[in-house]
Amino acid sequence: MEINIDKRSGFCFGVINAINIAESYLDRYGSLFSLGDIVHNNKEVERLKNKGLIVINYSDLKKLYNSRVLIRAHGEPPETYQIARDNHIDIIDASCPVVLKLQNKIKKGYEETHAINGQVVIFGKEGHAEVKGLAGQTGNNALIIGKDFNNIEKIDFSKPINLYSQTTQNKGEYKKLINLIRTRMQQHNCNPDKDLKVFNSICGQVSNRGPHLAEFARKHDIIIFVSGKESSNGRYLFEICRENNPNSFFVSEKAEIKKEWFENADKAGVCGATSTPMWLMEEVAERIKHYSK
Ligand code: SF4
Image (cartoon, rainbow, N blue to C red; front, side, top):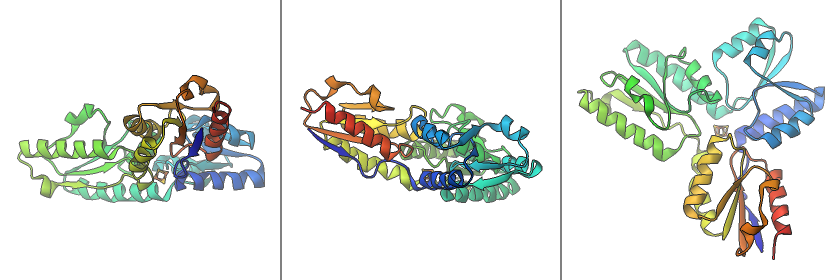
C-alpha cells in the first residue's frame, strides 16, 4: 500500500515559533513555565513537559513571583501582562505575530467605534484563549458570537459595527454571519455599506489548507487525520477531509488505528491540523505500514 504524509499538514509558523522559543529556553535553563498548553496536542505537550516545560493556569500565575513565563501563540489579554508586571515575572512572549497584529487592530477599532457609540463583534469561540486575548483589547466589551450564532440578538443592529473573526474560524461560516448581520442592519434601517466594517482576520495558514486538504483527501482511498481532540482547526479540517473522502478517520495517536480500516485500500493519506507535530504523523504512517498488504 502506498502511504503519503501531507507535506503541508502540521504546525503553522506561529506554533513552530512558540515551540522553538520554548525549547531554546528549556535547553538553556532546564525548565520554563507556560501559561496554558503551548499547542492543542497532548502528545507534543507531553514531549515538552519531559524537557522541563511546566504548564500553569491563571491562578498559578497570580501566585508566581520573580519567575519566567512563556505566552503561547494564542496571545493574552492586557491583564496578563499587568499581573506579570506586578509580580516581577519576565514574559517570554511567543504570541503569534498574526494574532498580535489582530489584537492591535481590535484595540484601535474599539477606540474608534466606542467614540461613535458603536460595537466590536468577534466571531469566535467563547472562552478560547485567543478570543480572550482579542476581547481583552476592548476591556472585554466586545460581543463574542459563536458558530451557532446563538447570541446574535445581543448585537444592536441600529448602531455601527466593527466585525472581526478569530484567526482559526471557518471562512464559510464567517461569510454567513456577515450576511446575517447585513440583513439585520437593513431591517433596523441601518446601512451596512456605511456602518458595518468587516475585517478579514482568518489566518491564511488555516484557511488555505482547506482546499489543499480537499484535494489530498480525494486522491487517496483512505485518510487518517491526526489531531488532538481539543483542536478547533483540527475538527474543521477533518470535516473537509470527510466531505471529500467518506473513508476518513480521526485519530490522536497511532494506538487508535485499526487494521481493518485498510482492508480495501491501496493508497493511504496521513494529514493533520496546524497543531499536529510532524513526528506524530510519521509515527502514524509507520504504524500503517505494518497493516499494509
Ligand atoms: S493559525 Fe495563524 S494566527 Fe494562529 S498561530 Fe498559526 S500562524 Fe498564527
